[in-house]
Length: 331
Image (cartoon, rainbow, N blue to C red):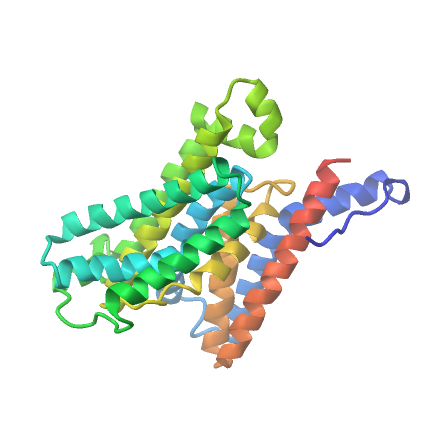
Protein backbone atom coordinates (compact mmCIF):
# COMPACT_ATOMS: atom_id res chain seq x y z
CA UNK A 1 0.00 0.00 0.00
CA UNK A 2 1.04 3.59 -0.48
CA UNK A 3 2.70 4.95 2.64
CA UNK A 4 1.80 8.60 3.07
CA UNK A 5 2.90 8.81 6.67
CA UNK A 6 4.74 11.96 7.58
CA UNK A 7 7.15 12.36 10.43
CA UNK A 8 5.34 13.49 13.54
CA UNK A 9 8.00 16.01 14.38
CA UNK A 10 7.38 17.92 11.18
CA UNK A 11 3.63 18.36 11.79
CA UNK A 12 2.09 21.06 13.93
CA UNK A 13 -1.25 20.36 15.66
CA UNK A 14 -2.98 22.50 13.06
CA UNK A 15 -1.36 20.55 10.24
CA UNK A 16 -2.37 17.24 11.80
CA UNK A 17 -5.95 18.48 12.22
CA UNK A 18 -5.95 19.59 8.60
CA UNK A 19 -4.69 16.22 7.40
CA UNK A 20 -7.26 14.41 9.53
CA UNK A 21 -10.07 16.53 8.09
CA UNK A 22 -8.80 15.91 4.55
CA UNK A 23 -8.55 12.17 5.10
CA UNK A 24 -12.07 11.90 6.54
CA UNK A 25 -14.02 14.23 4.28
CA UNK A 26 -12.09 14.37 0.99
CA UNK A 27 -14.30 11.68 -0.54
CA UNK A 28 -17.55 13.43 0.37
CA UNK A 29 -16.26 16.83 -0.70
CA UNK A 30 -15.02 15.28 -3.94
CA UNK A 31 -18.46 13.72 -4.56
CA UNK A 32 -20.20 17.06 -3.96
CA UNK A 33 -17.70 18.91 -6.16
CA UNK A 34 -18.10 16.35 -8.95
CA UNK A 35 -21.90 16.56 -8.87
CA UNK A 36 -21.72 20.36 -8.86
CA UNK A 37 -19.26 20.44 -11.78
CA UNK A 38 -21.29 18.02 -13.91
CA UNK A 39 -24.47 19.94 -13.05
CA UNK A 40 -22.92 23.22 -14.24
CA UNK A 41 -21.44 21.71 -17.39
CA UNK A 42 -24.60 19.80 -18.32
CA UNK A 43 -27.54 21.51 -16.57
CA UNK A 44 -30.24 19.80 -18.65
CA UNK A 45 -29.02 16.21 -18.60
CA UNK A 46 -27.14 15.67 -15.31
CA UNK A 47 -28.98 17.30 -12.34
CA UNK A 48 -32.36 15.64 -12.89
CA UNK A 49 -34.34 13.24 -10.72
CA UNK A 50 -34.49 10.78 -13.60
CA UNK A 51 -30.70 10.79 -14.01
CA UNK A 52 -30.01 10.51 -10.27
CA UNK A 53 -32.46 7.60 -10.05
CA UNK A 54 -30.69 6.00 -13.00
CA UNK A 55 -27.30 6.42 -11.28
CA UNK A 56 -28.60 4.80 -8.09
CA UNK A 57 -30.15 1.98 -10.10
CA UNK A 58 -26.92 1.36 -12.00
CA UNK A 59 -24.85 1.55 -8.79
CA UNK A 60 -27.13 -0.74 -6.78
CA UNK A 61 -25.45 -4.00 -7.84
CA UNK A 62 -21.97 -2.58 -7.24
CA UNK A 63 -23.06 -1.43 -3.78
CA UNK A 64 -24.45 -4.87 -2.91
CA UNK A 65 -21.31 -6.77 -3.91
CA UNK A 66 -19.05 -4.12 -2.36
CA UNK A 67 -21.01 -4.25 0.90
CA UNK A 68 -20.43 -7.99 1.05
CA UNK A 69 -16.75 -7.47 0.34
CA UNK A 70 -16.68 -4.93 3.17
CA UNK A 71 -17.69 -7.67 5.61
CA UNK A 72 -14.71 -9.78 4.55
CA UNK A 73 -12.36 -6.81 4.70
CA UNK A 74 -13.60 -5.73 8.13
CA UNK A 75 -12.50 -9.10 9.55
CA UNK A 76 -9.07 -8.51 8.06
CA UNK A 77 -9.25 -10.58 4.88
CA UNK A 78 -9.65 -10.01 1.13
CA UNK A 79 -12.12 -11.79 -1.16
CA UNK A 80 -10.97 -11.75 -4.79
CA UNK A 81 -13.52 -14.38 -5.85
CA UNK A 82 -16.60 -12.13 -5.75
CA UNK A 83 -16.66 -11.04 -9.41
CA UNK A 84 -16.12 -14.57 -10.72
CA UNK A 85 -18.66 -15.93 -8.24
CA UNK A 86 -21.29 -13.40 -9.35
CA UNK A 87 -20.75 -14.44 -12.99
CA UNK A 88 -21.18 -18.12 -12.09
CA UNK A 89 -24.30 -17.41 -10.04
CA UNK A 90 -25.83 -15.45 -12.94
CA UNK A 91 -25.41 -18.45 -15.22
CA UNK A 92 -26.55 -20.86 -12.54
CA UNK A 93 -29.80 -19.05 -11.76
CA UNK A 94 -30.76 -18.70 -15.44
CA UNK A 95 -29.81 -22.32 -16.07
CA UNK A 96 -31.91 -23.57 -13.16
CA UNK A 97 -34.90 -21.57 -14.37
CA UNK A 98 -34.59 -22.12 -18.13
CA UNK A 99 -32.93 -25.51 -18.51
CA UNK A 100 -34.07 -27.26 -15.31
CA UNK A 101 -37.48 -25.61 -15.13
CA UNK A 102 -37.29 -24.80 -11.44
CA UNK A 103 -39.63 -22.15 -10.01
CA UNK A 104 -37.92 -18.77 -9.75
CA UNK A 105 -37.99 -18.57 -5.90
CA UNK A 106 -36.50 -22.07 -5.61
CA UNK A 107 -33.73 -21.23 -8.09
CA UNK A 108 -32.90 -18.03 -6.19
CA UNK A 109 -32.72 -19.84 -2.85
CA UNK A 110 -30.44 -22.50 -4.33
CA UNK A 111 -28.11 -19.87 -5.81
CA UNK A 112 -27.97 -17.88 -2.56
CA UNK A 113 -27.13 -21.12 -0.74
CA UNK A 114 -24.41 -21.77 -3.32
CA UNK A 115 -23.02 -18.31 -2.64
CA UNK A 116 -22.93 -19.04 1.08
CA UNK A 117 -21.20 -22.37 0.38
CA UNK A 118 -18.50 -20.71 -1.74
CA UNK A 119 -17.97 -18.19 1.05
CA UNK A 120 -17.71 -21.08 3.51
CA UNK A 121 -15.07 -22.75 1.32
CA UNK A 122 -13.10 -19.50 1.14
CA UNK A 123 -13.32 -19.12 4.91
CA UNK A 124 -12.23 -22.69 5.64
CA UNK A 125 -9.28 -22.49 3.24
CA UNK A 126 -8.12 -19.26 4.87
CA UNK A 127 -8.70 -20.18 8.52
CA UNK A 128 -8.06 -23.94 8.62
CA UNK A 129 -5.53 -24.40 5.82
CA UNK A 130 -3.85 -21.08 6.68
CA UNK A 131 -3.72 -19.98 3.04
CA UNK A 132 -3.37 -16.26 2.49
CA UNK A 133 -6.78 -14.88 1.58
CA UNK A 134 -5.48 -13.25 -1.62
CA UNK A 135 -4.18 -16.57 -2.92
CA UNK A 136 -7.10 -18.61 -1.57
CA UNK A 137 -9.89 -16.48 -3.03
CA UNK A 138 -8.04 -15.90 -6.30
CA UNK A 139 -7.68 -19.67 -6.66
CA UNK A 140 -11.33 -20.31 -5.78
CA UNK A 141 -12.40 -17.53 -8.16
CA UNK A 142 -10.43 -19.09 -11.01
CA UNK A 143 -12.07 -22.45 -10.31
CA UNK A 144 -15.48 -20.74 -10.37
CA UNK A 145 -14.69 -19.27 -13.80
CA UNK A 146 -13.90 -22.77 -15.02
CA UNK A 147 -17.19 -24.05 -13.59
CA UNK A 148 -19.10 -21.21 -15.29
CA UNK A 149 -17.64 -22.12 -18.69
CA UNK A 150 -18.19 -25.82 -18.04
CA UNK A 151 -21.83 -25.31 -17.02
CA UNK A 152 -22.66 -23.11 -20.01
CA UNK A 153 -20.16 -24.55 -22.51
CA UNK A 154 -19.07 -20.95 -22.98
CA UNK A 155 -22.41 -20.06 -24.56
CA UNK A 156 -24.57 -17.37 -22.92
CA UNK A 157 -28.01 -18.49 -21.76
CA UNK A 158 -30.22 -15.92 -23.47
CA UNK A 159 -33.44 -17.63 -24.55
CA UNK A 160 -36.37 -18.78 -22.51
CA UNK A 161 -35.82 -16.45 -19.57
CA UNK A 162 -39.32 -15.80 -18.14
CA UNK A 163 -40.72 -12.30 -17.88
CA UNK A 164 -41.25 -12.70 -14.13
CA UNK A 165 -37.50 -13.16 -13.63
CA UNK A 166 -36.70 -10.05 -15.67
CA UNK A 167 -39.23 -8.13 -13.59
CA UNK A 168 -37.13 -8.67 -10.45
CA UNK A 169 -34.47 -6.27 -11.69
CA UNK A 170 -36.36 -4.15 -14.19
CA UNK A 171 -39.61 -3.67 -12.25
CA UNK A 172 -40.65 -1.07 -9.71
CA UNK A 173 -42.27 -2.09 -6.43
CA UNK A 174 -42.83 1.03 -4.31
CA UNK A 175 -43.67 4.55 -5.48
CA UNK A 176 -42.00 3.91 -8.84
CA UNK A 177 -38.61 3.19 -7.24
CA UNK A 178 -36.61 0.59 -9.23
CA UNK A 179 -36.54 -2.78 -7.46
CA UNK A 180 -32.75 -2.95 -7.45
CA UNK A 181 -32.54 0.26 -5.40
CA UNK A 182 -34.96 -1.16 -2.83
CA UNK A 183 -33.08 -4.47 -2.62
CA UNK A 184 -29.78 -2.61 -2.31
CA UNK A 185 -31.18 -0.40 0.48
CA UNK A 186 -32.39 -3.45 2.42
CA UNK A 187 -28.99 -5.17 2.12
CA UNK A 188 -27.11 -2.04 3.19
CA UNK A 189 -29.39 -1.38 6.17
CA UNK A 190 -29.24 -4.98 7.37
CA UNK A 191 -25.43 -5.14 7.14
CA UNK A 192 -25.03 -1.72 8.74
CA UNK A 193 -27.24 -2.77 11.68
CA UNK A 194 -25.35 -6.05 12.05
CA UNK A 195 -21.94 -4.35 12.11
CA UNK A 196 -22.80 -1.22 14.08
CA UNK A 197 -25.61 -2.26 16.43
CA UNK A 198 -25.20 -5.92 17.39
CA UNK A 199 -22.87 -7.94 19.58
CA UNK A 200 -21.79 -10.06 16.62
CA UNK A 201 -20.90 -6.81 14.87
CA UNK A 202 -18.67 -5.86 17.79
CA UNK A 203 -16.94 -9.22 17.48
CA UNK A 204 -16.50 -8.69 13.74
CA UNK A 205 -14.87 -5.31 14.30
CA UNK A 206 -12.74 -6.68 17.16
CA UNK A 207 -11.38 -9.49 14.97
CA UNK A 208 -10.55 -7.06 12.19
CA UNK A 209 -8.96 -4.57 14.57
CA UNK A 210 -6.77 -6.96 16.58
CA UNK A 211 -7.23 -10.72 16.06
CA UNK A 212 -4.84 -11.64 18.90
CA UNK A 213 -6.68 -9.45 21.41
CA UNK A 214 -10.03 -10.75 20.14
CA UNK A 215 -8.86 -14.35 20.67
CA UNK A 216 -7.74 -13.53 24.21
CA UNK A 217 -11.17 -11.99 24.83
CA UNK A 218 -12.76 -15.35 24.03
CA UNK A 219 -13.93 -14.57 20.52
CA UNK A 220 -13.77 -17.39 17.99
CA UNK A 221 -11.66 -15.59 15.39
CA UNK A 222 -11.96 -18.34 12.79
CA UNK A 223 -15.76 -18.44 13.12
CA UNK A 224 -16.02 -14.68 12.64
CA UNK A 225 -13.70 -14.70 9.63
CA UNK A 226 -15.72 -17.52 8.04
CA UNK A 227 -18.89 -15.52 8.68
CA UNK A 228 -17.37 -12.56 6.84
CA UNK A 229 -16.61 -14.75 3.83
CA UNK A 230 -20.09 -16.31 3.87
CA UNK A 231 -21.77 -12.90 3.82
CA UNK A 232 -19.44 -11.79 1.03
CA UNK A 233 -20.34 -14.93 -0.93
CA UNK A 234 -24.09 -14.41 -0.49
CA UNK A 235 -23.86 -10.77 -1.63
CA UNK A 236 -21.92 -11.92 -4.72
CA UNK A 237 -24.66 -14.47 -5.40
CA UNK A 238 -27.37 -11.83 -5.05
CA UNK A 239 -25.45 -9.57 -7.42
CA UNK A 240 -25.21 -12.36 -9.98
CA UNK A 241 -28.95 -13.02 -9.73
CA UNK A 242 -29.86 -9.36 -10.17
CA UNK A 243 -27.40 -8.91 -13.04
CA UNK A 244 -28.81 -11.93 -14.87
CA UNK A 245 -32.30 -10.52 -14.34
CA UNK A 246 -31.21 -7.11 -15.63
CA UNK A 247 -29.46 -8.53 -18.72
CA UNK A 248 -32.01 -11.27 -19.33
CA UNK A 249 -29.18 -13.76 -19.71
CA UNK A 250 -26.36 -15.59 -18.00
CA UNK A 251 -22.82 -15.12 -19.29
CA UNK A 252 -19.62 -16.70 -18.00
CA UNK A 253 -17.83 -13.39 -17.43
CA UNK A 254 -20.70 -10.92 -17.10
CA UNK A 255 -19.87 -9.81 -13.54
CA UNK A 256 -16.07 -10.08 -13.55
CA UNK A 257 -15.72 -6.28 -13.77
CA UNK A 258 -17.45 -5.83 -10.42
CA UNK A 259 -14.29 -7.01 -8.66
CA UNK A 260 -12.33 -3.82 -9.34
CA UNK A 261 -15.36 -1.61 -8.74
CA UNK A 262 -16.03 -3.25 -5.40
CA UNK A 263 -12.44 -2.88 -4.21
CA UNK A 264 -12.32 0.77 -5.30
CA UNK A 265 -15.56 1.47 -3.43
CA UNK A 266 -14.45 -0.35 -0.26
CA UNK A 267 -11.05 1.34 -0.02
CA UNK A 268 -12.45 4.73 -0.96
CA UNK A 269 -15.07 4.20 1.72
CA UNK A 270 -12.44 3.38 4.32
CA UNK A 271 -11.05 6.88 3.82
CA UNK A 272 -14.49 8.38 4.46
CA UNK A 273 -15.68 9.64 7.86
CA UNK A 274 -13.34 7.30 9.77
CA UNK A 275 -9.57 7.08 10.05
CA UNK A 276 -8.87 4.31 7.60
CA UNK A 277 -11.51 1.92 8.97
CA UNK A 278 -13.66 -0.16 6.66
CA UNK A 279 -17.40 0.38 7.12
CA UNK A 280 -20.67 -0.08 5.22
CA UNK A 281 -21.67 3.59 4.92
CA UNK A 282 -18.23 4.50 3.59
CA UNK A 283 -18.49 1.77 0.97
CA UNK A 284 -21.83 3.14 -0.22
CA UNK A 285 -20.33 6.63 -0.57
CA UNK A 286 -17.32 5.21 -2.41
CA UNK A 287 -19.57 3.36 -4.85
CA UNK A 288 -21.58 6.52 -5.47
CA UNK A 289 -18.40 8.45 -6.32
CA UNK A 290 -17.59 5.87 -8.99
CA UNK A 291 -21.17 5.74 -10.27
CA UNK A 292 -21.56 9.50 -10.61
CA UNK A 293 -18.12 9.70 -12.25
CA UNK A 294 -19.10 7.09 -14.84
CA UNK A 295 -22.45 8.76 -15.41
CA UNK A 296 -20.87 12.17 -15.99
CA UNK A 297 -18.35 10.73 -18.43
CA UNK A 298 -21.13 8.95 -20.32
CA UNK A 299 -23.18 12.14 -20.60
CA UNK A 300 -20.20 13.93 -22.12
CA UNK A 301 -19.57 11.04 -24.49
CA UNK A 302 -16.17 10.16 -23.05
CA UNK A 303 -14.60 7.00 -24.53
CA UNK A 304 -14.78 3.72 -22.63
CA UNK A 305 -11.09 3.70 -21.77
CA UNK A 306 -11.59 6.85 -19.67
CA UNK A 307 -13.88 4.88 -17.34
CA UNK A 308 -11.17 2.29 -16.68
CA UNK A 309 -8.66 5.08 -16.09
CA UNK A 310 -11.07 6.79 -13.67
CA UNK A 311 -11.69 3.56 -11.77
CA UNK A 312 -8.00 2.70 -11.54
CA UNK A 313 -7.17 6.23 -10.45
CA UNK A 314 -9.88 6.15 -7.80
CA UNK A 315 -8.51 2.87 -6.43
CA UNK A 316 -4.99 4.34 -6.12
CA UNK A 317 -6.27 7.53 -4.48
CA UNK A 318 -8.53 5.50 -2.19
CA UNK A 319 -5.70 3.31 -0.93
CA UNK A 320 -3.57 6.42 -0.41
CA UNK A 321 -6.29 8.19 1.58
CA UNK A 322 -6.94 5.04 3.62
CA UNK A 323 -3.24 4.77 4.47
CA UNK A 324 -3.17 8.44 5.39
CA UNK A 325 -6.19 8.02 7.66
CA UNK A 326 -4.64 5.06 9.48
CA UNK A 327 -1.33 6.88 9.80
CA UNK A 328 -3.00 9.89 11.42
CA UNK A 329 -5.09 7.68 13.71
CA UNK A 330 -1.98 5.88 15.00
CA UNK A 331 -0.24 9.11 16.06
